[in-house]
Length: 94
Image (cartoon, rainbow, N blue to C red; front, side, top):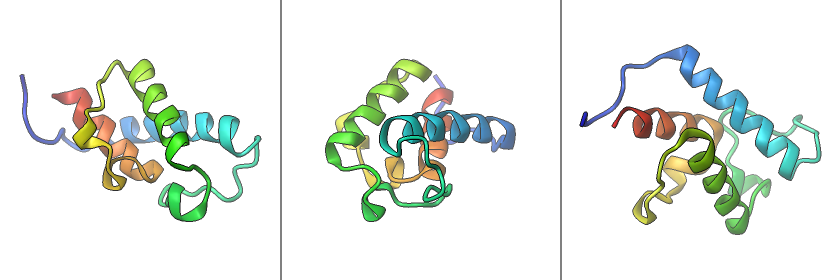
């Protein structure tokens, strides 16, 4: 089992960002991605509420075969596309 952060891989980061962005646009923005940038806070912008975050977590767990622990359900892990990409990269490498 490896510990720590994975080596940055821009291609993998973009893959996660694009896949999660598509999920959010389809399920929360009704196809309109004009308000969603990679660093947009989901909660502060009102794109996703706390219930919606649970849907995002289910998507991440099913799509990337990871487990999001209760103590990992934090804005710094799940509140933007960039944060999710970093989090999934870390979880996938551990």
